[in-house]
Length: 353
Image 1 (cartoon, rainbow, N blue to C red):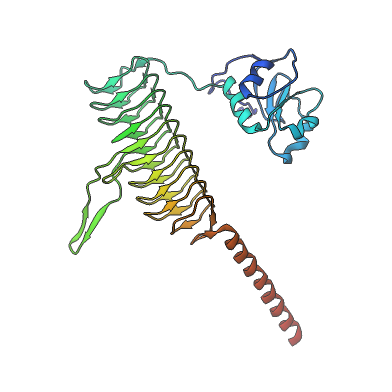
Image 2 (image 1 turned 90 degrees about the vertical axis):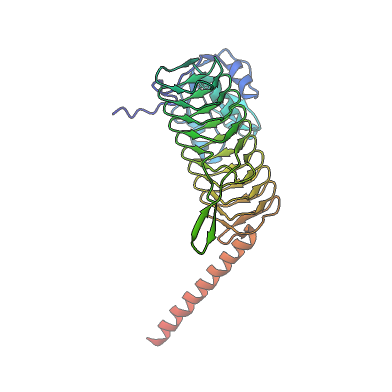
């Protein structure tokens, strides 16, 4: 097996270039001294060669910066003097964002290849823009509308009436129903969008399922991770706000409302009718009960259990969750008490010998 480390293995990634240093600097929205230099790709500091770009956004890796063979390195102005003389310092106040832009220059999202594969099953009244790509064994339901330059991967299912805007990407084995997508939405493999929510009435005779009559509305520039599930609303829509990022294995229940540019990390579960305002961040495995409001810019630590509303800008952690400073003070107090108890136990034993 070939274990050679390659950033952008050509077996899997389509590369553009080479690009001039000036083109890379422009793409990164950064600054660098003029130099005649052609660059062929990107690589980590320890593996980059003289014709590649790398970056540093963490002082922990200063030793790797000082020994790198990269032709150019994206760094914060505070670290520009640490870049070796053999490399060009590409300077920006936002190295990580600049790195993302530079890497995208070399490895842009592959464009759709306009075609409907012969094995795809497409309803007679579905509307597919001529510039869209429909992969092998994909299913496009009745009345569905697929916008310009969308890419539907093999074995994906786009249900009846689903609407997609421009430049959407639907991964293999993903399924969508009862959903309206904006522009540039990415649904990764295995995601389930628009299935019935977990709603039922309890009676002495058992459970009665409540019809789930809403939709899922996914606004522009949203990414939905692999094997994530988003239930449709019961009476109102489930909404995922523009620019939001959902990691793999996230559960979004019916009627949930996510604002703009929220970040929801893997294995988070959000119960029904909870609202996240703009720019909320949820750490991995956090759980939120239903009918809550999480204020704008709030941050919830991993594995937290949220059972009450969270104010805007607050940082919560623990289960049940509480403000982060309060939680950490409590942990510190318990540890101090445990050390005192351990010391007392030790003193008692030594006195009895």
